[in-house]
Structure formats: structure tokens, C-alpha cells
Amino acid sequence: MAELKGALIGCGFFAVNQMHGWRDAEGARIVAICDRDPARLKAVGDEFGITRRYTSAEDLFADGGFDFVDIATTVGSHRALVEMATRRGIATICQKPIAPSMEDAKAMVAACAKAGVPFMVHENFRWQSPIRAAKAAIDSGAIGEVFWGRVSFRSAYDVFSGQPYLATGKRFIIEDLGIHALDIARFLLGDASAVTARTQRVNPDIAGEDVATMLLDHHGGVTSVVDCSYATKLPVEPFPETLLEIDGSKGTLRLSQGYRLSVHSRDATRVEGVEPRLLPWASPPWHNIQESVALIQGHWIECLRAGREPETSGRDNLKTFALVEASYRGAAEGRTVPLAEFLG
Image 1 (tube, one colour):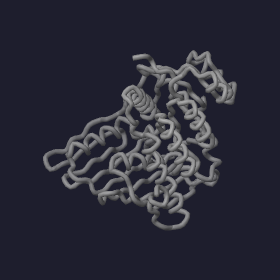
Image 2 (cartoon, rainbow, N blue to C red):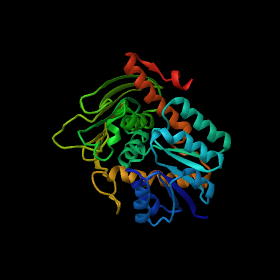
Image 3 (cartoon, one colour):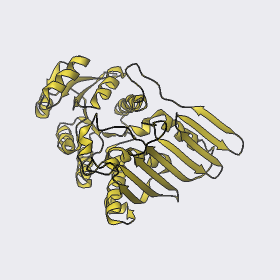
Image 4 (cartoon, rainbow, N blue to C red):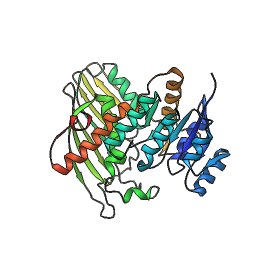
């Protein structure tokens, strides 16, 4: 089949990982890049040999010549760029969070559906190989019927040095990191019907919350705790590992620090290392996230070729984004928030 051609909009902090992934991907390549900052545009273009460079998304789309666009910009620009791509029938990947508001998110999903344009949100944490290994173990039935779970990301890593804008937003950890953990909870335990949330700001030098704890009621009776912190100082820094505790009727699953997956059942306890691959362009401790970028990009290529809806489609991601919005509302109002308030 013909190679798929893509364009990348946004050449900032994380986009370099996406460019590495696309360079190694089978069946697709980036042929054009766009960024308002000429210096970033030049740096990425020179590193990856991309000659088609644009400071205007309008000019990029006007010239065309690509099958899909990967939008790696900040959230405020997402709706306009997605709708720009949709008007031209261009399949679209959008960085998380999908939009600044549920209204915008729903409008984006509706526009893509109306135009018949494939739409995927780059929700890569569920594509981390340790998380996929945990999902496979749960689906095997080894621990029986799941009734409780915990998804935990606790760290004191300085994320602000590479992304200083994170310190200035009124929303921080739920929107930036908790969104990933909430999506993992959905992926492993099923969709949720309601959420109760509490937030804290421990670091006085930032504007938003850096600690969040969320209690999810899942369909089917499963309860989960999703907890995130950038204020937790541990003897060994676990960044960027997501840790899991899953209890079932026949046993338990634990994904612990150091990428150790333990599955305990009546018959045996199996412990294995599930550390991600260290790709040639990757570097610890980021290699977990970097590998997941390559994996979700491979999934996108497969879905485009097969005409299949991506696992983290815009339609699916509305459910994750609703958990983010419900968590903020619940923390502000001190109540349990049904997801129906956002999904209808």
C-alpha cells in the first residue's frame, strides 16, 4: 500500500518525540511541519530533514499534499486546527487534552464525524507496554472478576523546567497528568458513571493544583482510586512510572516501581519484569513514554489502512475528558459528580 504522508503542527517540547516516532514508523512519514516560532521550526526541520516548513497553519493546509495531520500544539488552538483539517477532509490526531471545554470537545468530534474524517486523540499512556501487559493479565481471567483498583502517579520530578507554562495555568495536574491516569482507569476497569475528587496545591510557586485524588464509580460495580502528585518526595524517584493495584475475586495484580508486574492467584504468584524497550532515540527515564508514542502511532497507521476507529478516538476520549471536567467540578463544589452532567 502507498505510504501515508503526514504533517506535524507544533514543534515544541514533546513534539520531538513524535517526530522520532514518525521517522521510524513503517508505512508513514512526515512531509511538512508548522510552528509559529521560526527557531523551533528550523531546529526540528534541520534535525529530521523536513524541507516543507510553515509558520502558518492556513498556508500548510492550502498547499496540502498530506493524508493526515498530527496536532501537537497547546490546548487553546486545538478546535480551530481540527476544524481546519476537517474542512479539507484530512485525518487528524490531536494532542491531549482534546479541548479547553466540553463544548469545544463535542464540537470537534461532531465536525469530524459529519465530514467522515478519522479523529484520534494522542492519549498515549494506555499504550505504555507495562500498562498493556497489565491489561492482558486482567483479560486472561487470572485474577477473576475485578472489584477494585488503584492507578497511581506520585513524584517530585521537576516538570516545569522543560514545560514552564505548566506552572502558570489555574488547572495543572488533573488536566496535564491526571487525564492519563483517568484514561488508564477506564482502559483497565471500564467506563465510569461518577467521580468524587479532592485537590491540593503544595508547591506555592505554581498557580494550579499539584496533588489530586479521585474516587471513580465504574459501571458494573468496580471502584477505583486515581491519585496523582508532583509533590511526593520518595527515596527512589519513580518518574514517569504509573503504578497499579488491581483486586479480583481470584487474586491480585500489582505493577510496582521498577516495572515489576506481579499476578497472584490461587494457583501461583507470577512476577515478571515489564520494562519498556529503550528505542535507539530514547533515553531513561522517558523511554516508557517515548515507546508509547511509537506504539500509538503504529496503531494510527493500522487504523487508517483498515478503516477502523482508533482505540483513543475523539468519540472515546470524550469519556476521559468528561472525567477531567467532573473532577474539577467535584473538587470545587465538594460533591460527587455524575458523568451524565457532561456526556448527557
